Amino acid sequence: MAPSHAVRCCQRGLSWIPVIFINLVVCWSYYAYVVELCIYTIANTEEQVIYLIVFHVFFFMFIWSYWKTIISKPASPSKEFCLPKADKELYEKEENPEVQQEILKRVARNLPVYTRTGSGAIRYCDRCQLIKPDRCHHCSTCDNCVLKMDHHCPWVNNCVGFSNYKFFVLFLAYSMLYCVYIAATVLQYFIKFWTLCRRRAIEHCPENHLPDTHAKFHVLFLFFVAAMFFISILSLFSYHLWLVGKNRTTIEAFRAPVFRNGPDKNGFTLGFRKNVTQVFGDQKKCWCLPLYSSLGDGYTFPTRLVNADSEQGNVEHQAIKCTVDGQTNPRPLSDSQNHLLGNDMHSEEQKDSSPANIEVCQPVSITMENES
Image (cartoon, rainbow, N blue to C red; front, side, top):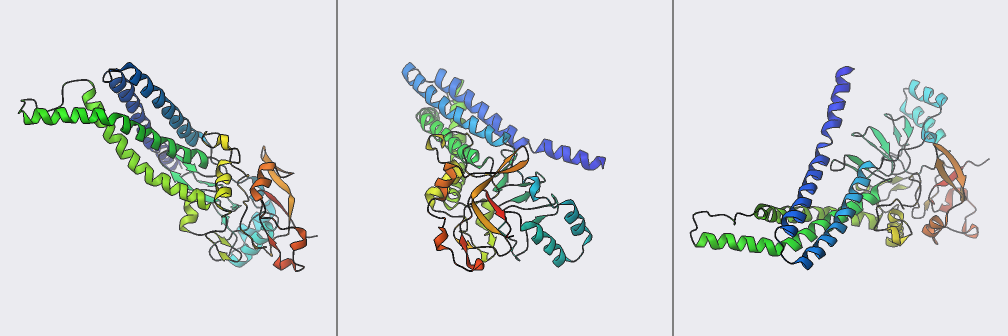
């Protein structure tokens, strides 16, 4: 027991190495740009001031979004998704997988769960002992189920999911802008140092290196590091912009979510505008700020029109679940969520008389009730 605890403590300590590395690089880049470039190299005062102001804007936004991604605790399913004590005891005693599924199905009838495993079974986490909400997955690194899990990122030592996905995308955006700004403003001084180096080499100078100044190493290396990070971040940022536009997570991009009527890679796609709104919120003034503004509660999500799950009860569009202090209480749909749903919800006159053929759009945080 003790060795296992010691190993886990070592793993937690080692997991911070990538974060420490990134912060050391950022601290050095700050010193190299502000001190070695702007103070020691640039002679024009007006140019110094402009460079420093713009640099600090990008630097502040980059650090803000980066640490918001790190410190935001991944959202996990509430206790309502755990099996009741009696059902849990039956599930653990039962050895027949089919009977276990019947137990899970009975419990899931009262939950807003629409996705299944590849074989059509209820998605259940044996580790956390709970029924997984839609788009929820278990992170082996964090040893916890994470709502709308995208991936576990070692560079932030945290799971990227529903609670911090917006911060992660902004972190990629501002880190890319931070790098490209440094590379663009350092370029002319990089060329000057490089030209001097080549000139001294042609003249067969006995000391075949850059002029002996404090900035020679920092300016050259700063350009190479900024350009390298920009190229690597650009591909990752472009990929996540594509995911946002398609309303998919990294996991869903590789494995399509499975509904009652089969896998559907576009099951959660609502159109580009609404897909972006789900992640960044409906207040455009907050899109560029690392402030939480995503819509929904992470348990249920609007989807394209799909056949209603025959194992679920009627859908009440008038109520939405709000989790406060671990307790779930119904409340009316907010204006932002009504705006997100738009015209996707069908009116009562459009419903078919057969309950099995009813088409619904799953609204954010809808409340499921069984037919009496």
